[in-house]
Length: 186
Image (cartoon, one colour):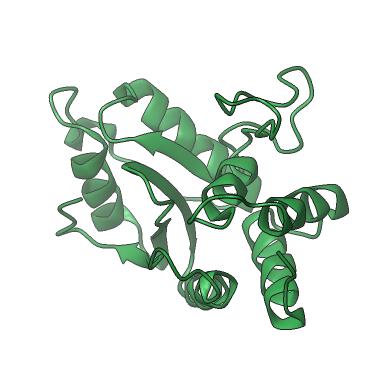
């Protein structure tokens, strides 16, 4: 599919914002996801998975990683992709630590307020309640998975605006993004 210049610019800025800087190889790969998309989701889910470290192999009908030994992005480092029931609590804490490291944040998580009996929905709401001056932003990837990261309020607003511009051309599905708050219900 031919992309408009505004979509290319939005994608480039979105990738740079998520990855804390421009990475030409990742941008080109994500652009290819949009240009070569064959389903009604127009490559948007593939972009979110690539930015979370899962390089999609377009020639594999099962969508396996293109190169498990050398992904384009450190797995689950800048953007987290997880389904609602999959992560263990210790994995969730590992995700949060990765984001802190990648973005240079300095905050403390009161782990005692989290329960193994809960799932990522409750953990995201609790984490949101604990963050001061930071937000959790989630991007709809046309699945039940969560694609989220932690950013400043300004960066969250920029990321959501860029995501909206990037997905504006999609006719078969309405993509959304949101800031996760302490009353998040999934």
